Length: 352
Image 1 (tube, rainbow, N blue to C red):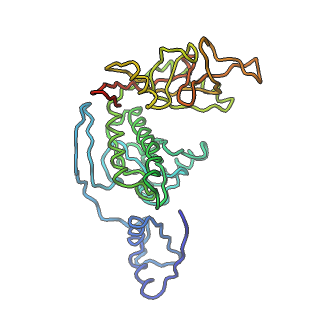
Image 2 (image 1 turned 90 degrees about the vertical axis):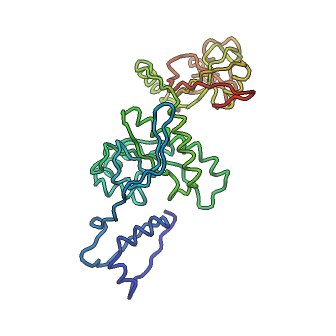
């Protein structure tokens, strides 16, 4: 919240609040993104927020399309607190404090279990990062699960460039949601316009990003290898002892060993496309993977292992690089493939 304003109530305004306080609170929240707190007000007929019931919204399907992969994407006007799907998505903040907007509505409808589980997660993990999502119990909601996802937050006066910089984080949030849906074998999920309300992401751009991300996700072939995942997790814990982070990359293997005889990854789609164009091939299979680059240094031809560190000759670097957009690893356990993306060239240009 950006600030707090106190308004004294007396006379006619106090009478209105006594009669319609909960309804007024909903209007202020939906229209202006404000959370109204009424203090020392005796509501008529013991009206309070927990007892107040909004008019029931009848679900209305506005649009639907079935993708080539068999996935159906539809647009609804509906109340997510009463929507019949396997999972509903909550547009959460990083602290998982559900005090306003959709988060408050879902938390109140689902009961105290939703906030309690969120508080437990924050105690263990400090926060839920922007672009990430977690699954939780639905409580009293009619769905099986609730998925809390954090989208990017913009200022009220954000520019087009601000939106462009935030778009990858919104895509990441949607992908995180879809990963959870797939991993938990959920058949349907209701995704609201994440970040478009209190977080000020333009609604039309938000809708386009969600649809395009869902469409691309449905075309991906997921890679599952439980043994490799176990070894990858062991390697990750080993590298994390030295403060190493997981890096998400997308790109092909490289046949020109300019930086060593290892496994090459491009950190950007643009770089991967450059390699594709050099090969002049009609089809290419991109592998999107989590890669543990760890502590890295510039590579060179002929390396079969990362070089020794100058400051500690007994230790090797974890990987080498060819600048900011090429990473090279020498152990297959440092990469965990997630998806295979099949691309086809059209005319003289290539696209994902």
